[in-house]
Image (cartoon, rainbow, N blue to C red):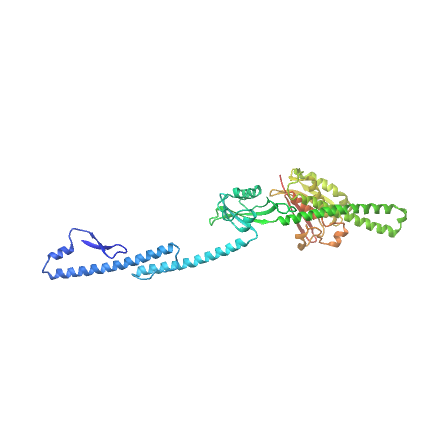
Length: 461
């Protein structure tokens, strides 16, 4: 038998031999038979109809293939003509619907990408993305300007090759090692056209890990903020406070000496004269205390939060005991008993002198603001890798609205009472700066009417 099979896109068929007996030959040998003629005519009509159907199917398949190729190439604007057999027409409609949905989604993605790109480009902060091999994936114009890079040619380069800065490399390595966000700063040395300005820029760094949909690390992103001007202003402020404190200290000392001399003279033995001289003496003492505290703050700030030269592993109990001894006379005057709870083997990497000053400030505050006959508890313990020194009093307590600001300079919860007790308003601020300069922090809990607990948290060793 021979059957016609159409090749897609062809107008003629190819005859495939399926046997040795051919219908047409058999029918041709049967001359004079009307039945044979009818069979021959029916076979011809059938074959012709099949040829037309196959041609139509071939055209529809060709159109579907061309349309699918256009869609695969990204051209989603032109649709496939819906024609041909029912099944092929349904397939064409499905392909057109798919193309329409893809076009909508692609348009949304492009719009969002353009919006994100506009935000990314206009940011003042620099944004730098790095892959797992520490190669630069992308960076915005601000990051390129801060790091003196070309935004186009830097893509694909190693961050270590593009930016040779040890502080930046340390932040990147810590982020990858810890698997968490890391903050830091780096200093870039640049030539300055103005001789009055140093050619040095300070960049604040904040890192975060990049992850894919499965939560796997694919790199990290760095946010860079230029804080050069802010650091310069802070330096000017520190210098101003330090210089003013030194300048004020001399006349204060002279005033105190003159008052003490006047009080000893026989011409100033009158009641009024002595009263006014006592006022001058008391206020000069207070001014001298403020100057001393300002000088302490200036010295601590000049350390810049870095490890201090005299920092070493220190057993905390002897430091606490010395601080209690310093404050004992004030506590005895108010009949306040100081209790202690401290293990003898707790150590921290600190400056012993500065830590003693912080503890003295906390105990002195607790004694000043506690009622006579009460007690103060000084504790030292290790909690989650931190050496925690806490001082608890039984005073009036602090209202919740004041707690976030108690460590600010000159902030007072009760101004009249604080001045009456001789406070400078700088004691707690000094405690905070001492703790932060040694890699620690401070915290406070208080209940009005039940007392307060102030804590210094230090890295245990």
